Length: 222
Image (cartoon, rainbow, N blue to C red; front, side, top):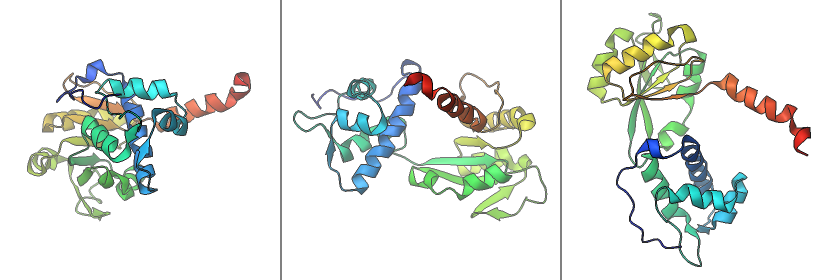
């Protein structure tokens, strides 16, 4: 493989299947683990085997963005990490806010992995006046009527919605009005948003249903 094919500066997200982007995140995590363990290089076959994919799938996924391998070597782990972070946009810091600091919101605020991957939560918001003014895991909690102000002041780009389903659309509308360009929605409801706003839904119940299906039908695949 050649490593000399020029990389596109910007990639149209519409041209890349979402599942490919999801696999890029998996490749990145695995490569980071390998580097921490002292691994310098890896082949597409080895990387695919670690994650349950074929070598052809790994090469096809990466080919959307260029050629990153080296003849006789495979991929240099550090180099491929740099390229995947560039592709995903996590080679820079993203400023994040959260709306809803109930049990799920608090659990997410305690998670240190966000900062490690370049996502810095700087503010949280909640409708419960008893929480306003508090600091949770070092993150200040504000009233929702200060959302637009804080988004502008802190240059926040991404919003996390961790409120109950009934209030998720209203919160999403407030985030969009405040200038947020990307939303991760943890509420089990589909949001209606302008086309220029990117949204990812994380429904934990759906994920459990997927694994339940796989386990319940495992006998059929044997």
